Length: 149
Image (tube, rainbow, N blue to C red; front, side, top):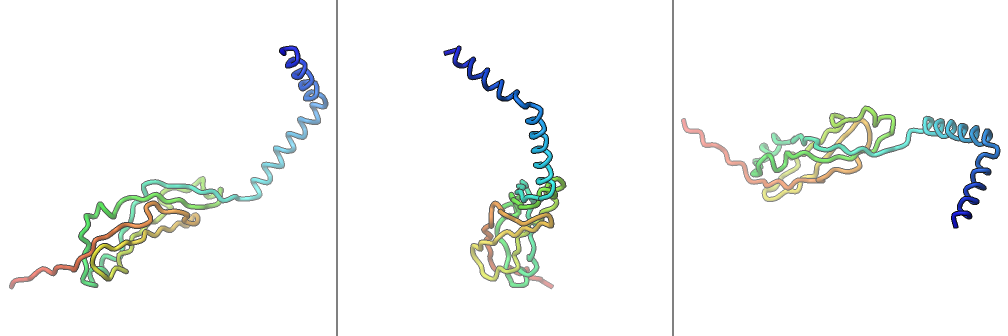
């Protein structure tokens, strides 16, 4: 059994060493060709950023509609995870500050539990996924303070 393995390895080594210079040149040319193809294209890759803070907008409009949020801010001002699809060349300088995440409360017009979708934007690429996708906001009528004169 060991003799057969030695024979096979010996034949393999002879074949590999036959025309070794030509094989080395072919390997070098394949490497050069591969690098030129990769450098000439800019493939899309996805990058995921963790702990992106959520900016809440539209609170003035919510109050103008006579509504108020009853949740604690920590329930909806959590950080989210965002995956961005971008060209590989942009991925080297990409970081969390390139993604803006907002929770727009201005479209809420009813009281009760409201599911508000999170939106994200990036100049560096296309938003592929946001986790979580939305927050549940509890809305009630705005209680106005009585002013006594």
